[in-house]
Length: 97
Image (cartoon, rainbow, N blue to C red; front, side):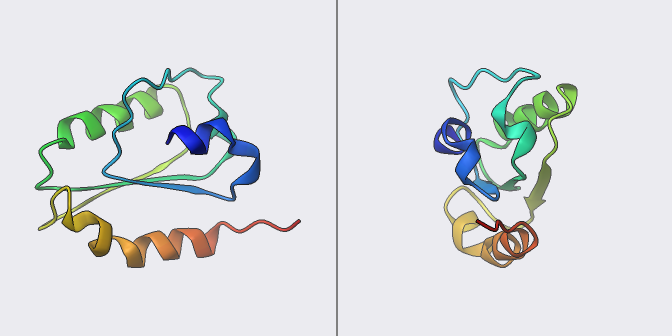
């Protein structure tokens, strides 16, 4: 999330898996408004409340993003378990030089 926002002009899209978005100041001028953002978390993740809060914040600021919760996954298993969806997201958002 940090690198995605800091260098937003070079990414075709950013995927955040069970993100720890602590310390990022979300505003209507967020650099993510111009970068497709995919956020995924496992329903069994102990940090799910903070990720849901992030989703709510982004919605309130009208920052476009995709949000998904995957059943049967926790903070560790979300990495491997979400790869099909992550690659699908990246295939939908490409850049040309």
